[in-house]
Image (tube, rainbow over all chains, first blue to last red; front, side, top):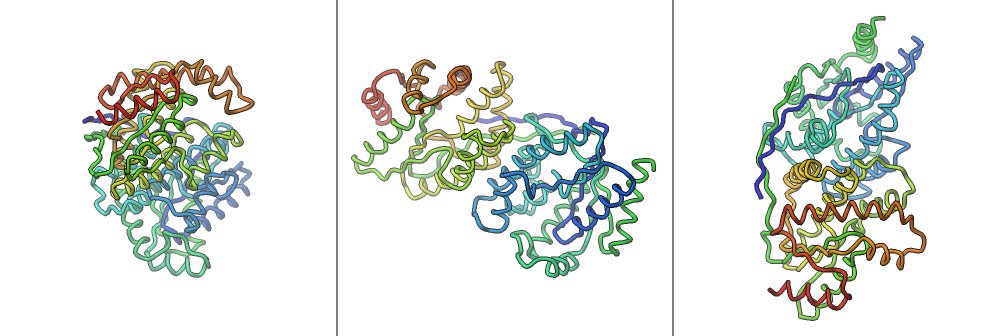
Length: 230
Length: 222
C-alpha cells in the first residue's frame, strides 16, 4: 500500500484572550529560574498567572510515568516515550493551558511542543535535520497535523547557552541526572533547537542565556511589557 | 504562514521468517479464545509460537489498564489514542524481536484496532474520518516502521452476540453505552475490511468455538 500524503497547514494560534508564554532551551539553560522570575514579576503587577510544565511534574499520571522513564526506572522504546509526551501534552492543554487562556490568564510553561523536534530527533538517533523524520515528528506529535493540533505559544523564549555552561549548572543543581543530561546529548539537542529556530524564525525570541540571571530577567520583562503594553 | 507537507509512505511487509498473525474484532467476538487456541494448535504441530496482546503487559499497557480502561481517570480520547500508540511501540519492538528469532506471533489486536476504535470515537462519517485516521496511522506506521501482519483474521459477530458474551464475563456492565459503542466499532471494522480486502480474512464468529477454530487453522494452511 503506497500513500502520498500532502497537505498545507498553519500553526494553530492562541484564539483566546490570555497570553501563552513558554521557555525552551537545553537542560541547564536557566528555564526554571527565569520562569520563576517572570512569575514573580507578573504577580507583583497584579496579573493572574498559571504555571505548568511539559511533561507535567504533578497532577498527571502520564507525567509521572514519563518522569519514571526519564529517571531510567522504566525502559521503553524512544518512539513510545514520544507518544507519552504527546498524551501528556494533550491532557495539559485540556486541563490547564486552554482553561487558563480562555479566562484571560497568563500561562507560563516550562517547555512546550517546540521540544518535540530536538528531543524526538535525539531519541531516534537522527542527525540529519532535513530528513523526512523531522516532518514526521511534527505531524505525529501534533505541531502540524490533520488529526489534531496544539496551540502554539504567543511567545517562546529560547535561552541560548553553551553546552559547557549548561553542564556546569546541571552538576551544581542535581544529584540525580536524567537521561538527556549528558554532554554529547546536550550538544545534539542544542543544534536541533537552533536548526528549528531557523525554520520558524518568527516563533522564537532568542535570549543570550550566558548573561547574569538579573540581566536575562530584565530582558524578558522588557519583551513581556511590550506585549502586554505595560 | 502556511507550511506545505508532503511525502510518500507505505506499510512495511514482514521481512522475517517468523509469521505474524493478528486476530481482530469487537470486544466479545472471541479473539482471546481463538488466539490462545491457535497458539496451542500450532505448538502441538511443533511450531515456535508466542501469544501477545494489546494493551501489553508492559508498564505502558498496565498503565492503560489501570488508568484508562478502569475509568478511574478521565483522559481525553486523543490522549488515549496516543497512550495506546505508546504501548503499541513497546508491543511492536517485542513482536519484531520474536519474528526475528523465527517465532510465529499470534497477536490479540494490533494497529487495525486503532482505526476501528478511533472511528468509534469520532462518529459516523466513516469515509472522511476513516481516511483521516488511516493517513494518521500510516504516518505513524512510517514513523515506527510498523510491520503489517501476514494475515489478519477478523472475527465478525453481531453486537448482540458480543454483548451476551461480555455479560457472561463481566458482572456489571453499562449495556446501553456499550451497545452503541460496540456498534460503532463494529462498523469501523467493516469499513476497514472493505477498504483493505487483501489484508483481512473474515471469519463468521457466530459459530461455536471449535468450528471457528477449525476455520482459522484451515485458512492458515491454505
